[in-house]
Length: 315
Image (cartoon, rainbow, N blue to C red; front, side, top):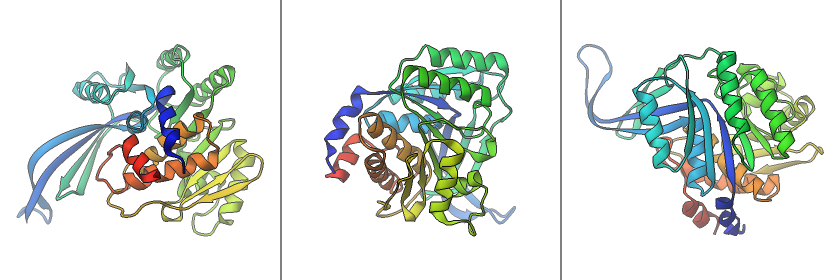
């Protein structure tokens, strides 16, 4: 595959709209079990931070060389300031609106490079109408070559907000890609590309994950339901692509060694989006994205993949 497509990533700007989070990692050593309960005692050595949720998607777009604007909602707290700093360090233009909820933070306690526990700070009620209008005002004022909605079901994406974002994308004649969460019950019909994993695809199609109609049947169901191209990531089984014209394609997995799948879906979507808006077909874009995700799962945590790493992988 020609890696020269990566040279064009820097010419594109992606607007990422979604549930932005802060990932906090507490790193330490485990040498004994607590006498108070059968749990390990972690001797803390250091802490690190990274943008999570929609922020991780934005980080991967920036790391791959694209320009990115991130729109999301945070709380008026110290975690907001840490998140803003981490975004700036990664070259991400963050447009963060303060709302009456805490900044979503996921703290992972790590021992010997393995995750021992995760602690979540979050409130997931829907944003109110005034906040929604502030978000949409930012979207209207932000020029981009594509809009990506990153829905983690944390309350930012409402049906009304999505419908207006779809109208804006159609008016500008730019692609709208969506990473869905079925439990959020937002109808994402009309998007250019819907990206989901196998479990979520089964939920969207209303079939049992283990006793469904098979991937082809699920794909046909989703195209009829959503009127969009559908891309389903399937772990070790690769990626299935269902186009609106009825054609299908399957891309094999590229992972050589899996250490951590955290954030791999965001890495995939970042590569898919950039390649697609640079003129690659959906299938070719999925091949490139799969290479990026294959690199990602060889890392620990929500680490991004660089353009040079992907260039080397593509040869």
